[in-house]
Amino acid sequence: MEDAVKKRQYSCGLDAAVDVVGGKWKALLLWELHHGPRRFGELRRRVAGISEKMLIQQLREMEKAGLVDRKVHEQVPPKVVYSLTSFGDSLNTALIPLGEWGEVHMETIEAIPRD
Image (cartoon, rainbow, N blue to C red; front, top):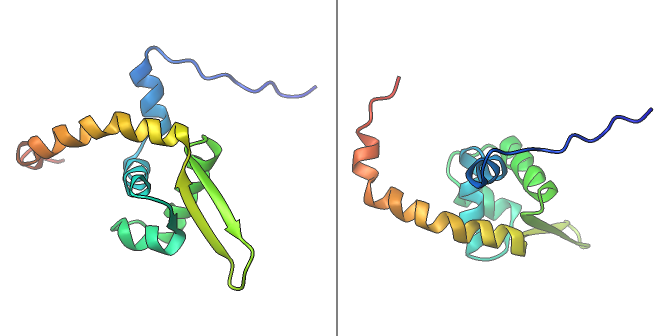
């Protein structure tokens, strides 16, 4: 007997959106790809602090979720370009007001004590 694929259930739209973009790196990668298609190395340089392993993992998850398109150009060495899908672009558009809120309140947020 095959295992049934579990369907995700959410309590509200915010719950669903946070599940898709969850974590620090995906939002930063979405933002970087908002500026246009990028090669892997470009993303690694432009997203400060992300390791190669984490970048690979996040891009794979984003591709599986339908946020990112991965195009392989057959050449030597292989050229791989990542770009936003329309689904990813729509999520990025929704995140812009959150980023603007963060800009306005950055000093307050930076002053919050961390454990």
